[in-house]
Every structure is written in structure tokens, then in C-alpha cells.
Image 1 (cartoon, rainbow, N blue to C red):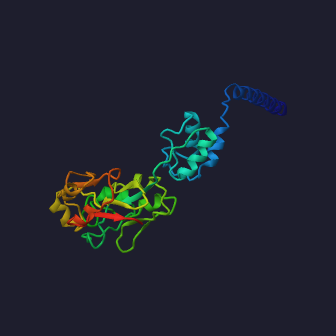
Image 2 (cartoon, rainbow, N blue to C red):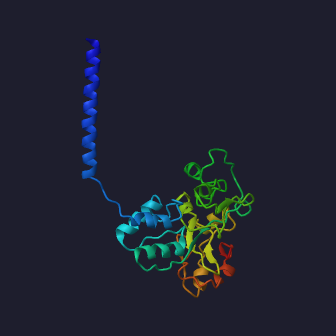
Length: 271
């Protein structure tokens, strides 16, 4: 009797499984979504870094967005650059518009020499964690914390922490301008600017405190004097909240501001 019950149970379960499998088969057929084969072709042209610089979670997401949009407006792979976008444009039957390459710059010069440590941080080596605890070893609430979150976020080995200055250094040749380091800096001291063939001019300070207060913690701080803005022939510099900012779209790299800055907060770099 018990044996018959077991056999019956097995048969019933088998029938239920068979019916469920048949139902699932027809349901999958009914709701099957055909994927455009162009997506695979476009994805094959992308570097596969999945860095997120395009604004999507991964390269596949960008490929799907491009094919769905049917154009390249607002859609770009910073890691692949112009050559990658040209290849994709050919596949899509479109014309690619070349974009100016971008590169990350570190807008802080609070090195160990310019901004001596006043306290010692001995806890979790994370900028986000340190930022939630205190102003930083130099007591500047806007300066680099030096824990290297930006380095860890870079998939292209384009960043490292200088052992002497304790500041991040960008390898211009390796940087693709994906912006991962920008997103992962809690102090927002990293910015993307035009890479250019002749270099970049930018303010290496993010301190919005009044000049005397900022200068107290860092000798290379911007004091908001406005001298750079007054002397800029291209009118590319503005001063707001005691901090100067150079619009890289207007800057002509004349370097008048570099030589005229009383604290050396403005830097020219062609590396």
C-alpha cells in the first residue's frame, strides 16, 4: 500500500512538472523580446571597461542606449575616445562628431609642506569615512584627505598617491577622463578638464573660507583676492565665495594668472 502511494505521488509530481514546463515554454515564446543584433556589434567596439564614464552601469548599457536612440547625441564612451565613436558611427550609419579629450586634474595643493599636519589620522583608510569624522590632518575642511579612494576607483591605473606630498597624482597618458575619481572624491577636489595639446591652467584649491583662515592652514590656498580675475585678458576667471575658478572653455593658457597669483594657488600643467 505504501509503495503504491509513493509511486502515485511521483507520477503526480511528474505530471505537474511536465505541465509546468509546457506552460513556461509557451509563455516564454509569447513574451520573448527580440534583441536588435546591432547591440552586439556596437558593444564589441566598446573597451569593456565598464567604468561608468558614459553614464551607464556598463558598456552593454551604453550599446543598448545608442541602438535604441538611433543617434549619438549625448552618448559617448570616454574610455574609447574618438576612434571608438567613429567605429560605432560607421556601424550605425551615422557621422561621429569628434569631442575634446578630457583629463582629471587635482584641485588641491595642500601637500605636507604647504599644509602641515596638525593631527594624526589613524583609522579606516577611506576618504569617505575620514570626511565624516573631521576636517583633515591639515585642518582644512576642503582639502585632500589622502586616503586614496580616487586611486581605488580608477580602472586604468592613472592615479597614485605621492608618498612625499600625500596628494593624488594623475598620469595624463593613462587617464581616459571617465570621471570615476571625480565621483568617488568626497571633497570634490578632482575635476575633468580639456586635456589639450598645450596644457591646462587651473586653481589648485577648493577652500571657500575667507583668505586669512584658508591661508592659516595652507600656504598655497586661494585667498580670493581677485587679482587673477582682474588681470585675465580672456575673462575666464570668476571669484565666488572667496575662491577663484578658471573656465577652461575660455582660458587661452596665457598664464598671466599663474605668475600673478600671490599664493601660487594657480597651476599650469602640460604633463
